[in-house]
Length: 76
Image (cartoon, rainbow, N blue to C red):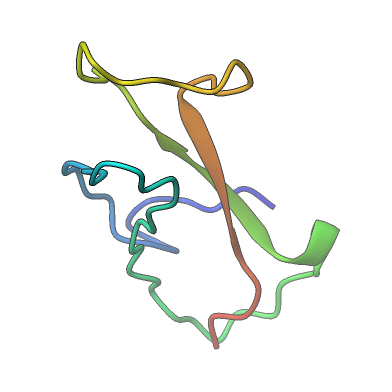
């Protein structure tokens, strides 16, 4: 099932900053709980986090395509 902003999570925007040598950052996502019975299609509700406007000195992995995946396993 596709997660919906406003129903399953809070839509937000911001910046992700990496220190020199740092290769991992976490993006917090506020989940909105519900008591609906939802089938565990592919282990929960899925959504995308979009990334854009990398700095001019950013070195990106060739596999990076500007999006990340998040999964809400249980929001009851």
